[in-house]
Image 1 (cartoon, rainbow, N blue to C red):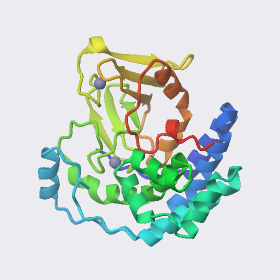
Image 2: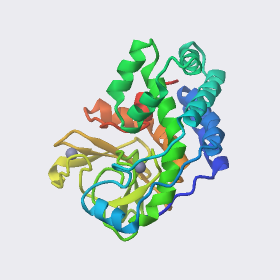
Image 3: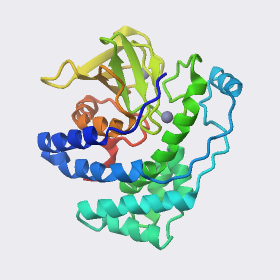
Image 4: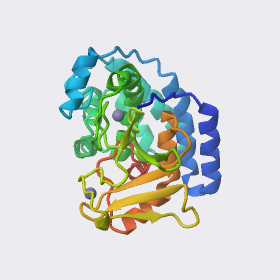
Length: 296
Ligand SMILES: [Zn+2]
Ligand SMILES: [Zn+2]
């Protein structure tokens, strides 16, 4: 398992600009992501390392539990709330309409239960966020995006602090060994010989069997398949499972995608989501899935 750096802002901004030019319908969203970058990089969050020894980490993972599972995580909610406000402010400058402004005011006036919202977002409880947002007349997808984005620097810090504890420990699950989220993308590396899964929430990566559905464990090649984006057969594809109808987008890379670029690649491959979904496949509870954000 490799630790991902999260610099590379020039590369990411360039990628976002290209994306806006290739797909004008994604331009606004790409600009919003670019605006988030410096705020997330310089979030100023104070993230204390969770208390976990190498021995405890091994026992946990061997028992099938991710590293953060059940740990007391210290996070200054005031700081996360302030970061959410800054993210909302930067979106407001770029996106038209009142949806962002309403969330900004709810945050500012402390109408929102931010602590509750963040703990729902950290647990990936999208339905509860939707209900809470609807109660206050707020856009739930936008609110979820902001909460997940505001939490991301903390999850990345925890991954940096903990991932070395997993060195040499095997992990065969389809969920992240650090934070428990489902992967945002898969990556083929080493001339497509190895498959890795990538967590968009904390940036972790871990090796996974090439021919296995990460959602239901299906290994029967007759019910596992691939879909391609027209004209781009090599770099991107969707792996689909006919047993559980789940799908995963997989990209071919020479080296691991920097963690800050994962959301951008997710956005850049949105067409693959449409292709997979139009064939009746679903993407179960992905953290920060652009396909369900709809903030453009
Ligand atoms: Zn993770
Ligand atoms: Zn499956």
